[in-house]
Amino acid sequence: MLPRLKRSTKRLLALLALLPTAVLVLGTIYMLAMGSLEGSPRTFLQSIQWAAETLTTTGYGADNHWRHPAVALFVILGQFLGQFLVFLVFPIFVLPYVEEKFEVRLQHELPPMDGAVLFYRYGPEIEPLLEEFSRTKSPFVIFEEDMELAHNLRDRGYSVVFGKLAEDPSVLSRVRQARAVVTNAGDHANATCTLVARESGFAGPLYALADDPLYRPPMLRIGATDVFTPAHVLGAALASRASVRISPPAEGMHLLGSTVGMAEFRIRSASPLAGRRLGDLRLREQHGVSVIGQWHAGVFTTTKGPETRVEPGAILVVVGAHANLEKVERLAMPIRRTGPIVLAGFGAVGHKVIEMLHDADEACVVIDRVAAPGVDVVGNVLEMATLDQARVREASALILALSDDSESVFATAAVREYAPEMPLIVRVQRSPNTARLYRAGADFAISVGQVAGQILAHHLLDEQVVNVENRIKFSRLSAGTLSGAHPWHSEALDRTGAKVVAVERGRDVLVEFNDDFRVRSDDALFVCGSIKSLERYQRVFHVTTAAAPSA
Image (cartoon, rainbow, N blue to C red; front, side, top):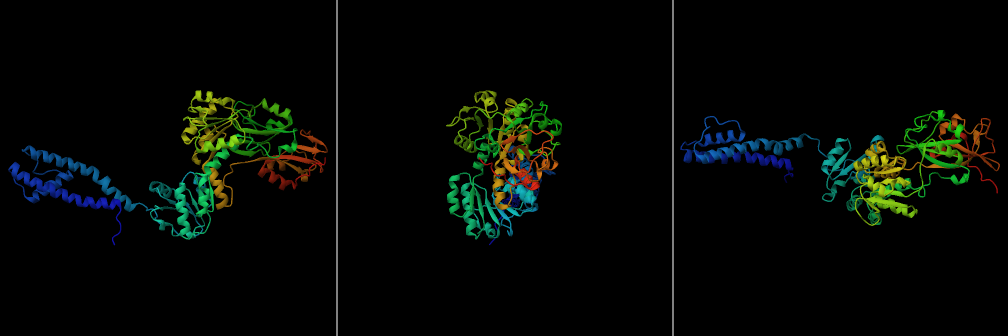
């Protein structure tokens, strides 16, 4: 049985048949026309030579003048036909054949899959995860059904197999050797891949990324190990960033009662705090507050010593007595936590955001270009009239859940100019655009690849690749080896990134300490920081959770 010819090969064979046919046809017509119309007969060989010269545009030799109009018209048409062949034959027939012969061909069946993860279809959801796989040299293969995308992925150095799974399920015959399978196509295509993988003998974990949570039960029934909906997780992450009711700013603040508060301040470029080191600002000594850390470009970093620089535009997290926090308020712009939460973009992700905010009893204002149930303001978020109608300057936060990153970048810049002090949370389509959104003024930019990468990395790499949440926590701890030291002046304490914000001594809770103050072994310390900084603190000072005081 002859092998199936490729399209470029068929074209070249058609050309090889067409050219001699055209020469024979033109030469025969020319021979007849010259004998009957011009009265100057030509032999068949002379006529074939004229046809070849005309089609290749190389000249006519002795035949360069004709008297009969029909012959002249025929010659003119032959000349145009020659030009047509010269300009179209090579790009349409010859070049595709040459390119196909010399290019690196895509694989059409899975390579040996021992220990490798198979990703069915490429997309923004798995983009950061593949970068992490490449960085850690973890083997993987992408099965892609879009040829152009498959070529691009191969050019980036990824192992790619091209094929049509629905037409030829045998391409997954080696999938049984894979360590895991991740399906990232549409829900129906994911179901096909799941069934084919299981029918091919694959018994390992198979994770499906679904568009609609309604498909989770049937996907599990046909063989998926677990089904995730990254778009809905992304909506939850955006909502939790905007609402303190969904995600409280700090865990364990109730331990201090009303003694200590926590506030967030935006550091404007004109603020006396901007760009300065904490050691020079002496906020503890002069204002009695502790700087826990700062949010900058979506990342929370705890302060570690007096060399920590306060970044312009960052959101500073400060803990202290309420009266002392008011002193810092004069130096920086406080983040308002009252007012509605404004959402721009009411697609699938936007619907999930609003659903969660309504469940938390948050007041919301929805902006969208198209009137629909649930949309409060119909308009373009880039227009000031729309922002005025939505009363954005009175909002406690604004969430941009737009479906186009270019529009999101432009909208971020416009909203930041319109309301410079308001927290701005932005949904990102493709993770590489995150940095652009931060440069445009976003406080938090979260992509579907970020949340999907975090979910899948937990299962495939046994680690958290990207932290969507970086929680702040208060803990009531024993004095440990900090006993005898000042609660603020300790290099070891600075290195942990945690802060002692109050000391419980007997029935008193102390929040300000003079230079002579020393921690006693029976004191209980209220320590604040990120989860990781608190873990470092407990290791360095050998502390345990302090027992609650007796009534």
